[in-house]
Length: 169
Image (tube, rainbow, N blue to C red; front, side, top):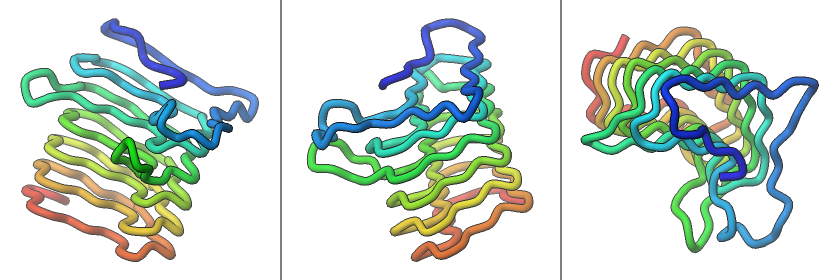
């Protein structure tokens, strides 16, 4: 991605002074993710960022054998993430094989999907807003131990879409 968390055990990416990460090309195939967190990374914090016009805003993709642990996303905003011909995507926040992580006070507007989690465990989603997304505000699939507190889904086709979710509170 434009920003990619380096391979290390602990990283902080902080966008200050209204910093915005924006993709300005018409060729979405060139760069699919605003911020990408790679498999096996732990203790990554991303906060205060605005991310616009990517296929995926914040994309954390672990694997079955190499999860991402302790990801903390706080007070970020993602806008206009849409699918394209080359890359699947369209999610403001994508969490795949992520565990023991927190998303707090983030916003996802005008994407295909606001917040997407797949095969993830022990996630806390607190006080996030999914607004005017084409499909689901929150699409949570095949995940265990999700904790949802004070989240809002406004103007999405589907607010909360929970598919094979176990132990959600």
